[in-house]
Each structure stands twice: as C-alpha cells, then as structure tokens.
Picture 1 (tube, rainbow, N blue to C red):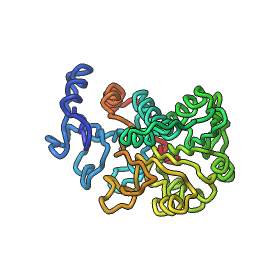
Picture 2 (cartoon, rainbow, N blue to C red; picture 1 turned 180 degrees about the vertical axis):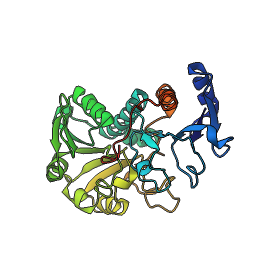
Picture 3 (cartoon, one colour; picture 1 turned 45 degrees about the vertical axis):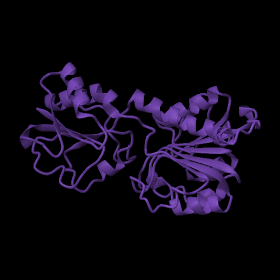
Picture 4 (cartoon, rainbow, N blue to C red; picture 1 turned 120 degrees about the vertical axis):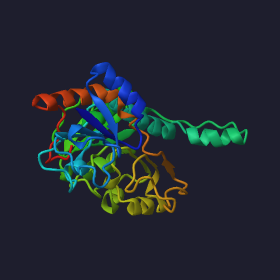
Length: 308
C-alpha cells in the first residue's frame, strides 16, 4: 500500500530512498500522479490542493508536514474518518529555534548595521548590552516555543512565555490566558511569536496587541502567518511603535509582489524558511503508515479542539 506525497518542497527521490530503507513494501506516489487510488493509505502533505481527498477509499490518515494542523483539521474536503497527524520532529524543532535565535541575535548584535558599515569602510562599535537586562516574550509554548525559551534562558535573557494554557519551563516565567497577554507584551524588548494557526489565534497580533507592546520592541514571527494582522503591523512600524520586525510567515504565501512588507525599511523577510524540511521525519510517517495498515492507534494525532 502507498503513501501519497503532496508537497511544494520535499524531494521525492529522497523520500523513496528513505522509505525503502525502512520498509520496501511502502510505495511512494507523488501528487497528482496517484496511480491506483485504492492503494493510498496515507497522505503526507504540506499543501492540500482541491480534490486531493477525492476517490481514496482506503485513506486512513493525512500527515501534515508541520507542527500545526488546524487548516487540515478544518479542511472542508477531509472525510471525517480520516485522522490528522502532525509532526513532532526534533529536526524541525531545532531548525525553527535556530532561525528565531538568528533573527533575534542579528538584531541584538547590530549585524545589518555592521554590514552597511563594511560597505562604507566605516569602523564604529555599538554596545549590545547585558542580555540579562533584555526581556524576550515567547508567544506559544509548544515543543518549539519551549525550546526557544530554554535556549534564551541559557543565554541569560529574561524570558517570559505565554500560552492559553498552563506550562512549566525551567528558566521561563510562564503565564497563561488572554488576560495575561497585555502584561507579557508590555514588558518585552523582543517578542517572538511561534503561535499555532487556530480560530483562537487568528488575528490575535493586531492593532491592540501592537499598541500594547513596549515602545521600540522588536517583533519576530516564525509561527503561523494568520496570527498577525499585517496592516496593523505596518502601521505600528510606520508610527515607530516598534523598532522593526523579522517575518518568516505571512497571511498569504508566497508573499505577493505588491505587499508593502517587501520594501519596508524596518522589515526583514525570510520565505517560510525556519522549519527546514520534513524528510527527517520519514521514520515517524512510516510508523503511522504501518499502524494504519495494522489498525493500531496512530501517533502524533492533532487535537481538533486545539488545532495542533
């Protein structure tokens, strides 16, 4: 029985080689060439084109190639009996953490300023200050947010974490609930959002949130684009309420050429590059394929209520 890969990014050759090393009985099909529809047991997808669920009578699971899965859970074409799994992948966790830290440290250490000075042959030093005096808010305390918080705490930053529900993370001042968000945002010099995309978080970081942030704070978004009101963000940047923003995710991807974010002098854009690739998770995907074939409980099933 087969796995159907539906992806803009993944290398089908690498997937075939890795699956063959695990179980030669697993055949990989690549959308839109599905072959015999009855063979498809599991879809592994980072996109869900129209009609992808149609005519697959033996489909048991759609494995989203990411950590959040709300849009897969809520997809109008997904049959109710088809389970939704997400990745809980150490490689992706490390990749997003590294990317978030790179964006923060680049700003903290004036690297773009020094790049400009190098072009002008200018020798001028800027003091970054003691990290223990810098407060970083981490919004979203799942597996990635937890790792980011731990890493920043290890670098001796003051770290405040926020989520809707309770968490306990060593070195992180964890706060919870909608009423606590304003206080978290108001104290932070840097705000890193790794919020999942759910009905609760959609547009959460909008005009009110940006107005609440400490004046001159720097905003980093590596979670889901739908959590950020981009017009409100641009307004906050234009009004100097925020010192800048580094964005890896957007409401519409790829980011349209007409977006004012491209040319904004205070915005750094990366093209949804934080998470790396899901190929390292093929072992867990193959395990879900095996379990689906055997009628066993699947792993990493997304919670429909939470959306991840």
